[in-house]
Length: 372
Image (cartoon, rainbow, N blue to C red; front, top):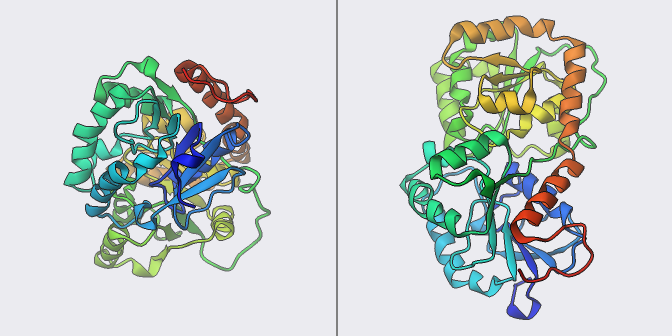
């Protein structure tokens, strides 16, 4: 449905750039559920993307959606579209579930999940946005949401923003869907799993380069969208002559993804930088071991549950895989508890506190949103 001034919302959730899968979509759906019972709320999504929420969903063209295939043209088209067509979406207030700001709108909260594109931009257009346009926009908006204390610290440091303007609203792990399953004996070779491996900062190249640490015991299944990075990984696997030990999977349905989590020997997540990082928590919710890069964020989100690897250290990588058979049930149980702690109730409370501080409104109120 096309959005017009005649059906103007009191609060509009701007999710015009999310894709049908991935962390941005998961966060948007969970965020929207937190406020779906609030009067006068609607959400804008790309055509073809449907959120499992009970509020009105408006559509923008499908070519605005996020994709694993990097395009310098799409951000430019988004900028033009937001100026020309989204001017009709002037709700009283706009809550962006991503970092995509609506120009010229004053009553606006923006969510910046991480600063990865600032350090590792996909192209010059993205670099310009993150280094020139976004800093100015963040200083003008009412407030900023992010998903972890680590991300909050980096945002404050990189852009010189007062930390009091940045509010942490953590993502949700759907433990009603991701849960342990009974493990039975299998004749197949045990496998390692990576999920969401569609971008360079996921650092799956290093996992492939460290194949001598795992290839004698495990296969590797890589879940990644079709794009430039997955093509690079395929070429690297061929160069390293390990294609018989690596399987690439794309377009994996959610129920199949859950099965992969439940059956893997471990999820491996050697990311260089993240704002949150759902796959390790989803794997932990499924009762599986996780191997992650030794970063500040990993310690914040996952505690002492994972096996940590120092990136670029073959000794550390091999030590992690040597320790994997001794990953205890007690550790797995604690991992399930950590995953369960990222609940919808936790997100709802954090969002309620943020909206109260920024706009002076509460998401549990039943009265209409008033002007500030």
